[in-house]
Image (tube, rainbow, N blue to C red; front, side, top):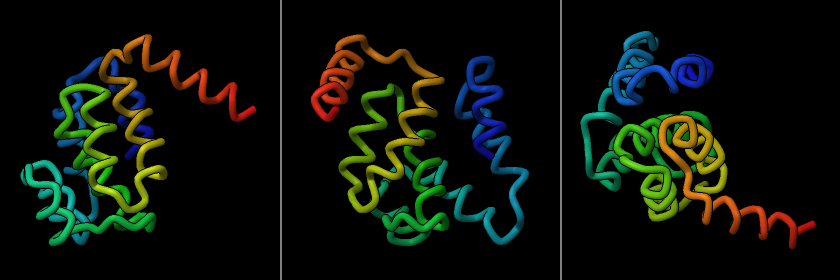
Length: 120
């Protein structure tokens, strides 16, 4: 799933690409991922179809939900943070995916690099 996303993210709209990826999923996973794109209320989606734990059955559907419904890099990271739970685990992939789709503001990159420098 992620290989396909990263391979084509610069060439195709991310929502279209996510829908195509979902169509190739096994039947038992399909509804969870379809709802990830159709439901806009994150709390309701998570309560009914996913969860906020780091387990792959929770994290990956939420990652696709956040990426699908984000209109900017910053918006996706903000939504992920508001969801809570294993947000740092999800945030790594959400940031990478949205970084392929949207421009990342230089001020954000500078702040991140400053924090990484401080952490050693």
